[in-house]
Image (cartoon, rainbow, N blue to C red):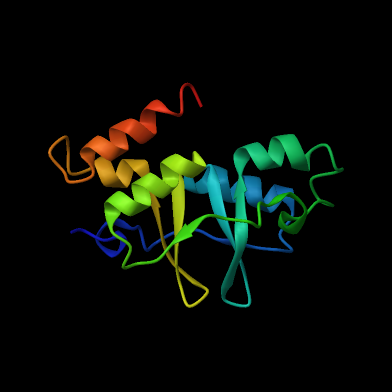
Length: 140
């Protein structure tokens, strides 16, 4: 059975707890992403999404004064590199998330998204599960 190690993206952009909203937004724009893992002392601390910046960040003050630590989600659903794809897809469905951090010994090893699973097409082992997960997201 395929594992997350086979599907995860290992080259990703991350930010630090102390990075301000301007830095976060610039990283998202430069790399065309809406999701940034937050790292501190070489360990994952949470994630920041573009929605976090708009909904949580801009209401807290000036973009130069608000940091990732103030807007990030720190209770993050994670998987490990040896988790099988179907279990990961079900975990994503249960938690209504589109991306999963892949963690090993508290260190971020990669990121996997629903799109990564469906890259194999309709006939992949996880194709049905991915289809079901995607239905739960509606328009977001």
